[in-house]
Amino acid sequence: MKRIAMFGICGKMGTSMTKELLMEKDMEVICGFDKLNVEKDMGYVLGIGENNKKVFNRYEHVKKLNPDLIIDFTNVKAASETINWALNEGIDIIVGTTGFKKDELEKIEKSANKSGSKVFIVPNFSIGAVLMVKISQMVAKYFDGCEIIELHHDKKKDAPSGTSIFTAQQISQAKEFNSTRLKGDETETISGSRGSFSDGIHIHSIRLPGFLAHQNVIFGTRGQTLSIKHDSIDRSCFYPGLLMAIKKISEIPNYTYGLDKILDL
Image (cartoon, rainbow, N blue to C red; front, side):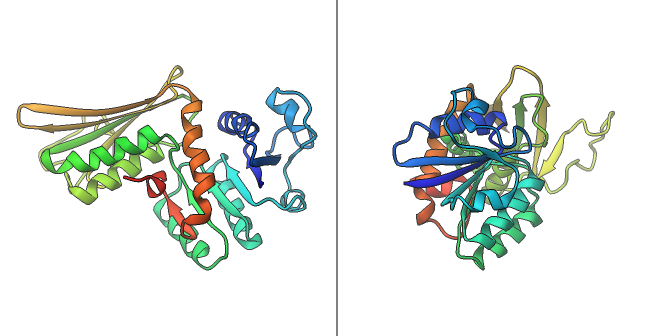
């Protein structure tokens, strides 16, 4: 029986994924962790009725329950602190939080490799989104240009999304499309019109109510374009990937980034 502590349990992802995990027979969500609803019964927070598990906001309360695994859906600052604590305590951690910078990930990797526990950072748990990235990397070498449009709900705090940045990084391994954000003869009438720029690819971020998580990778070459699009319609699409990450965490290195590392691709 794997004992799990859910960090960020009061957020939409934390709530949604916890409800799914509670139905698993070989796993137990032993507590929640959040700045909201502290000391309240976890079941009431989830809207499922009393289940005699609590929501905490202090690490020592979690430690007393001896979790095997932490799942984190918080924010970069909170997740970074929790990762360091989990490594010091020898607890494995799966992080679904996005927005980490490259240097932050490098520091986490170094710390993880010196520890006896696992850090698995997953910017997107949707298996379809992972396949979108892999297909994009595969076709990149056949086109002359590529841009990414990512669309998310208006409550998302980071832009561009972690998935779009990861997509650009993976595509650049096959082909680098641009060395600079603007070409020599290119100008912006309004600053930022050409979007952000990562690994030779322009990324355009849209934040509106009504969206959940969507991405369109657009390739262009002479006389044609190719679009590879993925839409997350409901948060339930993230659960199969999360469940796979939980079951595979004992088999991966101390530091792993991306769900693709555990898929047979």
